[in-house]
Image (tube, rainbow, N blue to C red; front, side, top):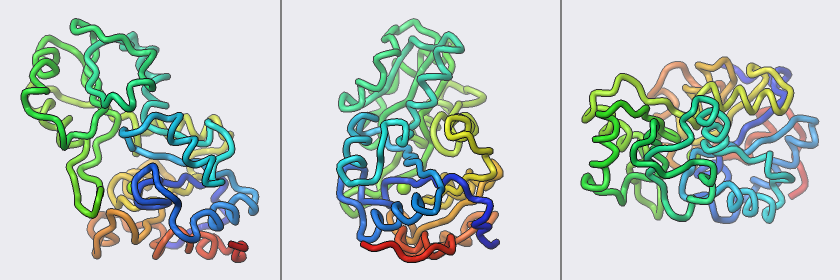
Length: 267
Ligand SMILES: [Mg+2]
């Protein structure tokens, strides 16, 4: 596949592994210049992460201080979808598995052991099976299962760690739940909201990320273009590990302007 640069009006950039290590660090070399070059071409840029370890406010502050984001609405995480979708369904109360650091993103969600929803919002590696028993029993009683995302793993401190996907799969299997709704990448609800707020159609979005499954394949399935970066959790062979192939493969985020046919931006 070849990147159709003329079709791209909005570029969505993953954070962890694409723009920086983790979601709290300094941007990779060349990242800020790449973002400036894309913006200078008249395209909008949004930062779209599945990270659950930091609240939206902190993500925005990090990106603002790095000169990348201009406004809180430039930054999207799975809570952005949850906050609009769950209350509309009457699912704004229930059992929430969340890290204390990100609790502030869920001020709208009421802790209620008998509520209609179970929401998985925590990275799984430090949870024990004992921690999951109340959620399992609540699902048996008919609660609806949501997960902020279902990524399989992420990279931290040089090692790969299991992410929310395995935790949600554990609950789904144990309680024999048919479906689990995903609220982050690559859910249509998230990208439809981003597209609507930006005023562009979904096919005009280019997603750029290091996760060949959730950044690339998921975005392609939504009719978007998707570029894979060879940084972060990328492993050699990822570009052919999943069908369909990425629209483009970039050595790093600093290759993005050239892939869009843009001149180099000053550093
Ligand atoms: Mg990533």
